[in-house]
Length: 332
Image (cartoon, rainbow, N blue to C red; front, side):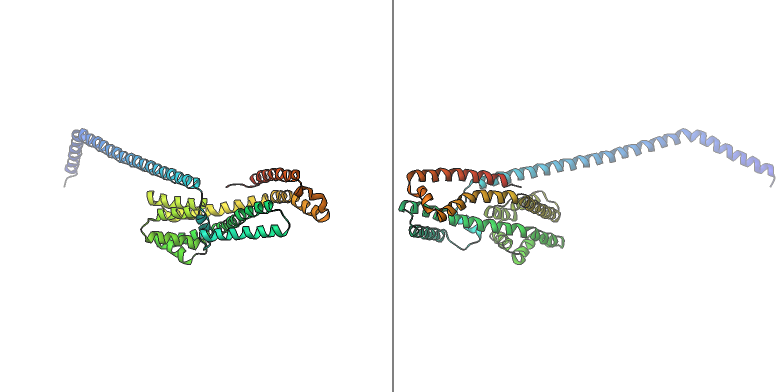
């Protein structure tokens, strides 16, 4: 084929392509602009959906926060109402874990009072003094012992509660529901945590929900740590969330509170020892004076003015002891 013919054909093709591009250029640019606008519209719709989703998440968090705040206010109000109520002897006996009825407790108190009255008469005290002291002993000593047992049981409960929470955390992470985790503590835990969780399981068996059963445990065993536990369970039941993580954080908080209490007790031990020495010093001096010079101190017991001095000194001693106790006791 002649090369001139080939060149003419190529030039014609190039010319046709150039003419076609010139004719279709505006249409191509219009399609590009249209595609760009469509991409912008789609991007705007995507951004709008993202903004809407973010707004919905914020509203959901606000609703959840409001729900949590309402739950906390309700629990705090309930706690204040419970704290205003005076604990009965039956409730205190239950907190101490003793298998006594109120009637038996009153009989024991009466027996202690009678024993104190007989001892006072044996030591030569007057009838009026013996009656007053025996009444004070009958009314105060059994209740003081009951309070001591309750305090010791509460301390033991606080020592064991973080360990039980750790067991619950591991149980929930392994796939067990909360009911089975509570039953595990009620069956395998250590006293007194075991007994209190058994009450929760028994309350569930009669139809109560878990938050209600846990709140009843706080009512029967009023500890701030149990209040935290009931709040966590109530919030989880109302708003949902990671229960195992919440219980793990609660266990950590309880351990830190325990460490802080022990640190405060160690720091304030010197002040407590000083208060104990100062408070017991008048009684020790009076006993030594009575043993060495009974006639010298007998005026306080035989003379009406001595009775007045003893009563006045006892009042001021009580005020001093109360002031020192408030100075060396710290709430966390």
